[in-house]
Structure formats: C-alpha cells, structure tokens
Image 1 (cartoon, rainbow, N blue to C red):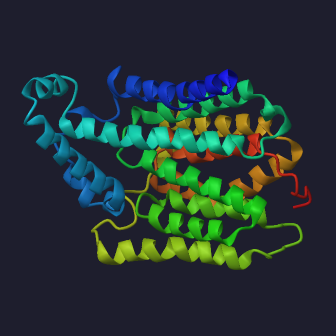
Image 2 (image 1 turned 120 degrees about the horizontal axis):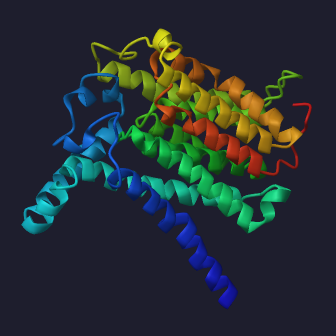
Image 3 (image 1 turned 90 degrees about the vertical axis):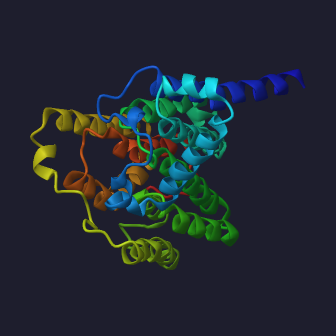
Length: 330
C-alpha cells in the first residue's frame, strides 16, 4: 500500500508539478525576444483579421479569461499591481490557459506511455525520462508564445491516445470519440489533420495497398474538412490562406535554417529510438504528414520550432509503444 501511495505521489510530481514549473519558468523567468506578448493589454486585432481568426477556441479562451481576470483583479488592487509588474493581464490569461492544457497534455502523454509500452519502456524510470524530455521540448519552443499551440498539442495527443486504443481494441465508441475530437480540434488549429496522418500510419498497408480501413480514414478526413471549410466560409478574411509565402526566407535565413536543423535532428533522434517495426510506422507517418511539412516550408517559419513539436512527440510515442499485431511488411 505504501509503495502504491509513493508511486501516485511521484506521478503527480513528475507528470503535473515539474512540467508546470518548467512552463512557469519559461513564461516568467525570461522574456521572449521573438514577440513581446507581455505588453499586450488585450487580444491583438490580427487574431481576428488574419489566418489566426480561424483559431476560434483559443481566441475565445484568450478574450474571456482576460475578462475574467480583469473582473477578479478589481477586488484585489495590490495583487493586480504585482501581476502588472510581470506582464499584462492578457499575458497572464494566456499563461493560465496554456498551463492548464499543458498539464493536461502531460497527463495524456503519461497515459499513452503506460498503454502497451515497448520492452525497454517497461522500466518506469525510462518512461519518466522520456516523458520529461518530451515535456522539455514543448517548453523550450515556447520562446514563440501563442494562445493556440499548447491547446492544439493537448487535442493532438488526446487523438493519438484514442487512435492507439482503437488500434488495440477496435471499439467503435472510441473511433466516434476520435471523430468528434478531430472536428472540435479543427477549431483550435490545423494540426488536427496530423491525427489523420497518425491513424493512416497505423492502419494503411502501403506495400500491399491495403485500404481495409479506407472508410474510417474517409470519415476522419470529413471530420476535418467540414469544420475547416466552414471556418473559411463563415469567417472570411482578406488573407484566407496564409500571412505570406516564406519558402525563400526559410532556406536563406540562418535562424530558419537552424530551426530546420532542430526539426530534422529531433526527428532523427526519435527515429533512432525506434525498433525496425516502429521505424516503418514512423516513416509512414512522416509520409502522410508531408502536406503539413510542405505547409511549414511554404507559409510557416522554421525558426518557430513549435511547429515541429507534434512530429517529435509522435516519434516519442511510436518509439515507446509495442505494436504486437503490427506486420513489418506494412
């Protein structure tokens, strides 16, 4: 009983407390040289007049959490003065939302790592080390603080958990949950499409062109496309696709090239952790994620390394998981 209690305490420390402290240090221990969000008194106009307008859920949370904090601080002028020394109420509101979804992401990651772990991952010490490394990757890329990326990571990891459960148990209630999650997470960020890539990496046999699960994949695509097109229709923007084309800048700027190196080396590192069977899955995932990678090159900036985080987390997940029924010829 005492051993079980100690394990629960350690889980809380490693899965919740320590990750939260890391994020707190990142947001309040040093300032980003990339964007000066600490001085924003409210959600900036570009969040509602550009491609960021399609991040409906994060924008809604940012606005309303800031309003709630503003109302609460009216009754605590001393606390308000203290908080304003360390950033605007909008910045604190973004931290509150991000820290909540960050801790939830850590919990989901913990559940994923416990679900059918690979042989070397049976050791709880190994699981904790990889867990903290994955968490650290998320935190270190927060030098580009946003109101949507951490929220998107939570939904993505939740989708991975549901996909793995469906892979092992084939329960249609789980698949229905995955459909709902992709539909909702499309209102967070386009990262939702990567859940389709992960599902396809597990269920599509490329060599035999086996599309046994083609119907399921089609439903997942519909669950993503419907809200995506709906957002484009109901929230028309002057810039509806992207802020700009940055492909030339991505391959000429030294900062962007360093960001690309980070993504490539990070993926190579996770690839080296995988067994031969797992490497096949990771290769297929990268293949099915190629549209996302292409979009990063065209309309994203490699220096915003947060864009590579879903891929790196997927590498850790695949390396940690035992796919007992998976055929290497897939």
